[in-house]
Image 1: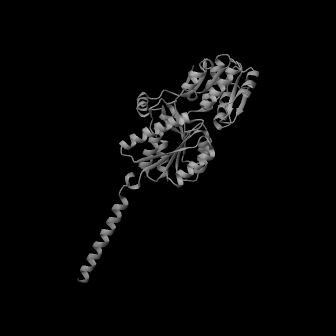
Image 2: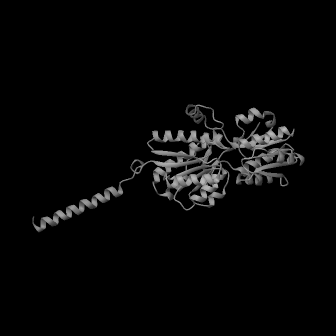
Image 3: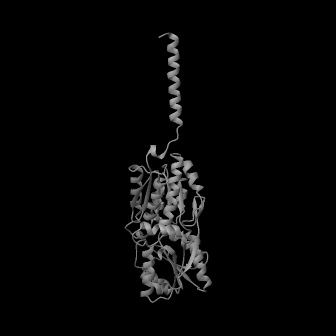
Length: 352
């Protein structure tokens, strides 16, 4: 081979290499090539709030099924932390270090704070479904969903004020949700009575007796289903004629069946009506009646948002954050978008 031919061959080979590098380097990466999108779900499936966590599981799985039908390869990994903050961190560590998730959806006060603290320096999207706002300061990759407890308790307190109730009390779980409720209620009743309890307690006779002796005409407690059951039980046992206020997902069918008398005239704040089309999906997906549809609806909404953002942006977390921040309105649970990384969700008052 002549020297000129060798040079020509060398140039052709180099050109082919350059073209190959350009082609494969610029070729869009698809979820199928990088493996499934992995999202961890940290909730309570066997503890105090399992009635909500089971609803969350059903809604998330409906979202997963629909996403797969649309061509998204998404895996959901559920972790049960039983409202124990330490267990929530262990769950998050497993999800990040062993399961290699790109995002975590967590629920309730204990996990929202503990998981956000663990993730603050990690490139993982985190949407938490809980009342606290403090986790937002830990990382720009954190987004809050759920309803506004401070505003909700203020509105419930105002209803009691409108009914000419002179004094109310707040029975407050020792979590940020309880503190936010107290702040909201004090905007209407600055001198209200406040009694606190450790989350997980169900015997409130001592606190309710103190409240009764203070002559408060209403009690607000924004814990979980068990907390409402315990409060209403104490009201009944102490023959205390007080109105009740709470967040409406604590007033389940069990609560209504056991304490219909004590609930008469009660006020609650919470989500608006779940979209009827989604209600139909729930009936098909679950063999039993769920205690609440809200957990399912809100998980369904955000699992879809997370998956689509992660698929579009791949490993670019700034892009993912932008996609979530600009998520479209979704009527499943009355989601109106994120404002300053806080979900704007329609709030509704109900009287029983």
